[in-house]
Length: 133
Image (cartoon, rainbow, N blue to C red; front, side, top):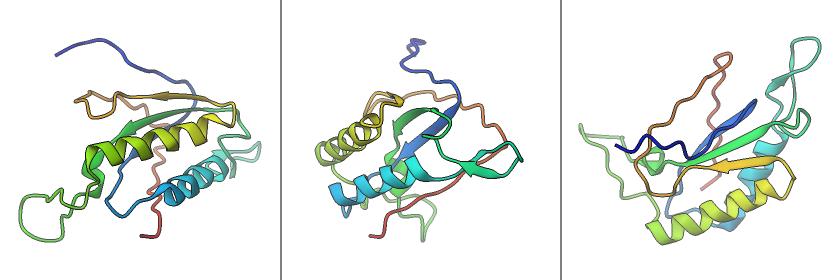
């Protein structure tokens, strides 16, 4: 295994992005907009009332095709719903570009690579945001 660090961020969000065959640029853009405006960071009163843009946070986007696996039946996931690599990578890059257009620091993993991802979850606070497909 290669122990080389690919990306690292400070305060912000780690986004594990799964792309399905049904996803299009419209869904990716809408998801990016939601992430940028989602109020999940505490204000001075301790309430989740600030967005990633409000705190000028950082974003790490990691492709994660396993998130779109069909696990409804059986004892092994089916990856049939996942987008083909070429289409998925294109949407992934568009998604990252949309986030980057804000001027926030956006880092990425290596698309399609096997990676060891370490996350220090402050809270812990984890949200699942999906597009309507």
